[in-house]
Image 1 (spheres, one colour):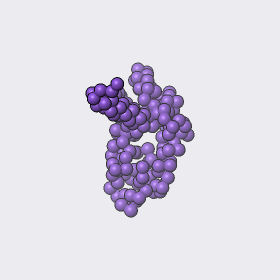
Image 2 (cartoon, rainbow, N blue to C red):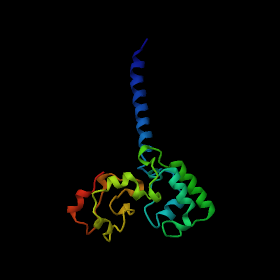
Image 3 (cartoon, rainbow, N blue to C red):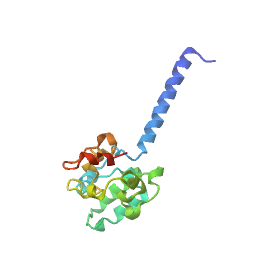
Image 4 (cartoon, rainbow, N blue to C red):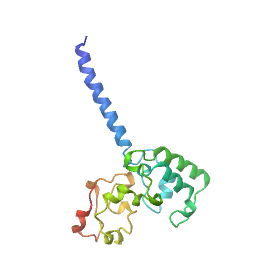
Length: 172
């Protein structure tokens, strides 16, 4: 028998469960940076490029990247063993597991992943070569929330000197 309080509580519980599910789905979107970012990740990785949200690549890609830091895309990005172990553990724990990143991109390059290329397929090569952008890996040049893993179209800022006419190429 349903009492008046049961009828009030059940919808509230259902709403809370719905919000919890939504939060879990958002957390696995890979688009947002986890809250527990090791300081070494920001200090070391963001010193040269965007410190990518770990959910943007699958665990296997992160494993290969971290095991080859001495030849990290043409640069020696070696770290001490304790830091490598700590960052590797964190990257593995937060790696992407959803459909978009199941496929390991060529050379474990985020910018060569199918989803990245699909999202940026209309951007002409001249934009990537612009002095303020320099490469597709420089997410922060246009995505103001890249350091937080936020790549929403509403948060795109065109770098100085990039024509407003090129704005049509940015889509999410």
